[in-house]
Length: 250
Image 1 (cartoon, rainbow, N blue to C red):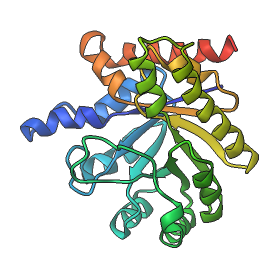
Image 2 (cartoon, helix red, strand yellow; image 1 turned 90 degrees about the horizontal axis):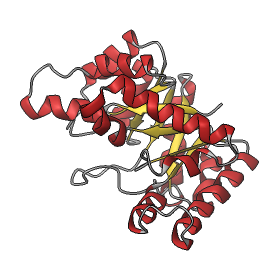
Image 3 (cartoon, helix red, strand yellow; image 1 turned 60 degrees about the horizontal axis):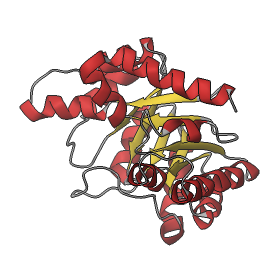
């Protein structure tokens, strides 16, 4: 069964706009759980622009589904993760000036550094994931550094889907989806778990959910956006239903 990890970063974004105590990302995590989420994702950034250290601590203590901590592969973040012990830590590239994560992690250019980070996290019993572009060189490198999970960046597919008038059968969309599918095959052949995410929404998620072997999709912005109008619990429920129905109809 395909799983949904809900990213609640943007709940914290709203809170930080006023530097106050609401809305609470932990409350959002509970609502997501009640809507059918299988996990909660948060990105603890170096500049703490949304999620704060205390949020991660409270999420670890108070949520009853798995926690995925997105993080840069810095010494500070590795030690925070080792202390918190989320079920999974996902290594991502990070830039202070980016609005959101803009591309996959370049493992090939920094294998030694990343191998050390993966080893430190794994030593604490944490499953380590890497967020990568649909690039077979990066998958091979992920295996070499000891990652257990590869999350394939679906942004190029999502952008093609939108620019082609939401036509899932257009050549441009099909080409990007094929790249993700081929990388999924390679990831699984190397014995790693195949996850996917970035820019997925209620219109483009079904083709990705139908890909063979994809284990989890991580989605945040689209769900939080819809939650403004229908509530978070129902927004999660709708997304999970789309994913599950797409998988069953394969």
